[in-house]
Amino acid sequence: MGTRSVTHFKESSTADPFMTLYRQYDGNPQNHGLDMVRFMQGKELVNGFGIDDTHNFNGMGDLAAQMVAHFKTYNYPLHDVNGFMLPNMMKSPRYTEPRVGGYYIMPPGAEDVGEQYSYHIYPHDEEIFITIFDEYEEDVIYEGSVTDYPYWPEVEGNAVEIT
Image (tube, rainbow, N blue to C red):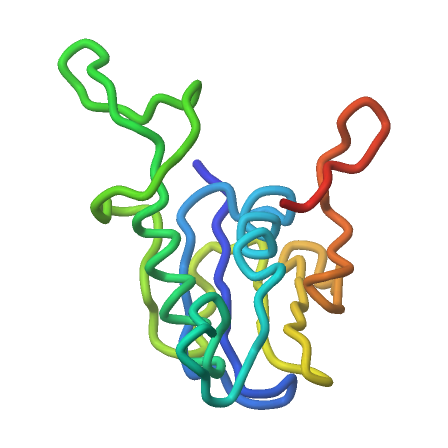
């Protein structure tokens, strides 16, 4: 059984979610949280965009749509294992056609789907903020900017650089 999570996209920290994304497995902050932060870092939340502004988010609705597209299409290459096509976790993921399962759009605000973690993504002071709630411990374990996200893996005692 995987570590399930839900991600709520909101227009502010106090607003009701306008969309919820469910992740079936690897929903912990070191996986799902880090996957989301890596995707969002280095991009700005804007209101309107120019012709050269192709790598930002035009509001929270655009951020949510891009996040879903990213997760459904960023896949490990498939390889045959005893007649089954399985992801080859030894190779780097790449963008491919969307794959079945893994991520699901749920009704806004969906909860109680067996999730251990719930994430709330919203704008705050012209930055993208994320709040992570551990549903099992009933505790907020992070609240802040994606730029300051604390769950970067360690490599030989040094934090991995953001690329």
